[in-house]
Image (cartoon, rainbow, N blue to C red; front, top):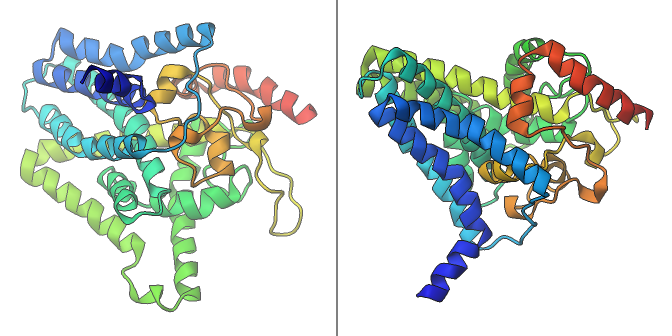
Length: 354
């Protein structure tokens, strides 16, 4: 028994699980009791996480790539499944079910939005790249529950084909501020994914008889809105829509940061050089990397989209540029365009010169 416990504690899946699920536990406690507990929950997913990443970066701590196994596979499913009860708890608390005060409500709104936008997003992203039916559907319904179901199509069919080019709505150009990117990318991604799905249906007679994926995304999203109203009233619907909007911002911040200013050379009218390690920003931070199931190891993911999260390497071939701080910290800085450009534009220009 002791040997088994030691094996479990030493397994990489345990580290990934502790980092991704501990903020969720703190948020549940904060949403239930409010007051100082809501403050601690918010600090856990923001300040404490940032400090832990800084310490780990100074110590040079890294999670080594490991082959996928049943433990790491199950963990992605567990974290994905945890999304749905956590969403219900968040809506119950934010609609007044636990009597949160104004400050506690604001802290819980921000905290839950960060978890859904960082952990739920990273987990759903991992799952929609799986070939097995159950993981893929779980990832798709996580996005649908966040009213962002179209990302399931647009990310796989558009972003992975056109990342770091002007044809990808989710790649930010040098000098483009996040507010400008947000206004352009959200509708651009929705339409690009829709056009790709239509193109697939036209070239495949069999799939044309199936329900259009966007019908599922929109009908599923509407069903979640109605469910929120039935379970939590009009206040629950308002909280749900606000929370989804907050989550969308987190999702798009990740895209904005991870490809900002990086470009693939055009080799023809409609063709580009193959995507390489130099076309994605990586973040080497230990704790946030574990929390987001190695999503900050973005370059290796683009090189090998089907590779399991535990296998991803940091800066493959030593060629992926590294962000100066963790992905959550850089996403926060991106909200202030002047500071963001002061930090990132010289780095992008240096990469282009090199």
